Image 1 (cartoon, each protein chain N blue to C red):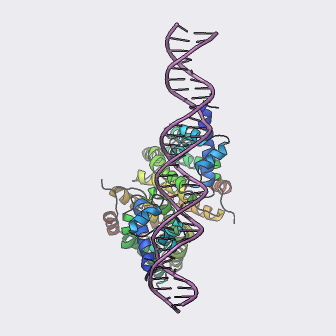
Image 2: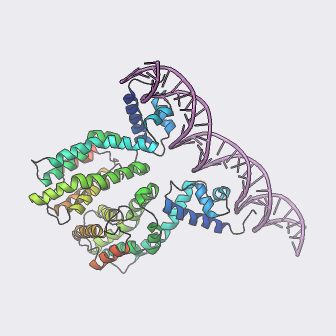
Image 3: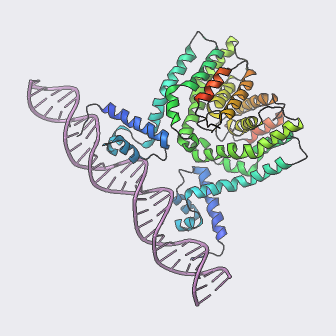
Amino acid sequence: MARNKYPEETHKRILDVSTKLFFEKGYDKTSLQDIVDELGGMTKGAIYHHFRSKEEIFIAVMERMCEESNIAMAKLRDDTSLTGKQKLQKMFSDSLTNPEQKDKFAVTPNLLENPKLLVYYLKMVAYTVVPDYVVPVIKQGVEDGSIETDYPEELADVIMFLTDVWINPTIFKLSAKQLTNRILLINDFMKQFGIELISQEMIDCMVTCSNVTEL
Amino acid sequence: MARNKYPEETHKRILDVSTKLFFEKGYDKTSLQDIVDELGGMTKGAIYHHFRSKEEIFIAVMERMCEESNIAMAKLRDDTSLTGKQKLQKMFSDSLTNPEQKDKFAVTPNLLENPKLLVYYLKMVAYTVVPDYVVPVIKQGVEDGSIETDYPEELADVIMFLTDVWINPTIFKLSAKQLTNRILLINDFMKQFGIELISQEMIDCMVTCSNVTEL
DNA sequence: CATATACATACCGACGGTATGTATATGGGT
DNA sequence: ACCCATATACATACCGTCGGTATGTATATG
């Protein structure tokens, strides 16, 4: 039993199992033995044939997960039929309803108990999503007159920080009421820049869809 | 060589060395052997006599570090000679100039490379500083008329989140210009609630005092 | 002087990672 | 179509280091 015909299947299975465990138990608390056990009848040798380290598995897991949403954001950014403001609103609503990502993060008990994942997420937002997707959209909004600001970079950053981190129930446990209030506060903030990011129906949707702690 | 006369000295030395290493190298990358080596002529037995685990050392390190600033914040909160708004402004300026905390965080290359420390910091802000010190101050501000908001809890949270996390150069690398812009944006935001958190001289002070990356 | 304390020493299983062995799928020559 | 050298896809055995524990021992203390 050596030399499989379809090594890419094995590669994918390792990533699938690792994804599940990293999100369920956290990176630190997932050992390579855990991954081996979950793979069923495969050994550490197989894993280290496909990946050079546990860290490399983690990176591959995260990159595969982000790929899809990044493609979607790039498409939205390059869409020529929408104003900057409309794109920003769509970005926000998409981030709330992206089913695949939500499913994966749903099994994470709390990102604060999964520091490696949290840090990857923060870096991803700050160093990729903001500069590559949000800043261009806001700059477009400034040009087409739908958004008003003297600091497009900083505005992009604070928007993503508030919407992706501060009101993220995967990071901070929030009751439905707390989440609603936070969203209302963000909305007030955004009005300064001519943006109503969130409609009332969206707030209702978020509160019901998100895995908030019930009162 | 057994049974020291002054065990509390040993206890303190372990905390001192651990503090240094946890901030310099990060928690994960600091092994107990590193601590033993840095202690010079002491063994793991000594450490495990004073602490039950590496985790417990970390908690003791962090609690000792936070103790002082928490006492200061409690004093400020219970001061009867200031309005809520004035207290909030002082809290903010104090957090920028607290010398002891700054010294310790200054040696940290980047909190994003020190996930355990970052998470402790986030939890500390969200679950202790905000509810115990900032919310009472804002509620007082609402009562004495110096602050206007319908959501004191959420306002307290977003203020600390923006000022302690978003513009924290220990977490996100920022150039002097980026930091200035972020502060201006926060200031605009705060004006909605009748609060000018930051004066121009404070901005200058922050930018020069903070360990920002120079252009 | 008995005891509790403040350590030192020796040891443990689990961890991430490596070195090496082996069977088979693959591609090139005939 | 067949053979064979080679690269590949693993399995097995092993390594140093990690956090943590069990035990031994000298000394301060009451």
